[in-house]
Image (cartoon, rainbow, N blue to C red; front, top):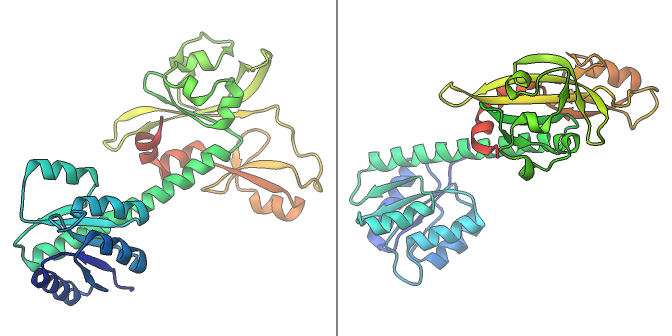
Length: 308
């Protein structure tokens, strides 16, 4: 496995050499040590370190906190501060740069090793979560299914572009509005709790933006926060009046497919495993969305961290 790269920023030569030797003995790649903020930026761009071990009290134009701020502008890496001071004002400044930890001088090798390993692991997990959230967000923004997320009281927290088109309201305009105000459906009392009853493929009729009735399939699931407490609902609306694929040769036809489990929604609104069948037999293209069950299973943290 490739060694993790650590850049040491320390202006005390003896301390820098000691840290260099300790980290090298631990199995990390330490390309160099630097003594100033400007040099730290240059070496960060050159070596792309996974972690920067930063002395807070650097001499020169930038101290360690300002240097860390500048590094974050050009490279994504974990930063651990080295300090012999516990001044509250300085610590408050340091917190703004979101460090992964502090090591107080003098320190032992075991403390250094533990902090480095934990910080590298946390940074990698955060990076993976950001990438996953970005991929998921792009899926939500590009699917043709209307997806709306509400809190427990039925107030809107998130809408994708398809739901904006369906309701005629922008996401910012709809934020915190009761779901009953957005979806004017027919045949039931206009209460949010009636619409938010968890269900799968429930057919309802809503009022379109043009004022005419529109038949849709509604799926509702509840989701939980990181403490396993129910915290809201995800509504997936599928318009039944979408043009159906009529000819096998029309390559512009799109079928809604879950981006995770690859099941296809058929004309009855049921997800079934037919992607390969349609691809081989009809040569159709597919639009990749995500079904409510996969929404809840794969991305439970997204609702809490990224919803409006």
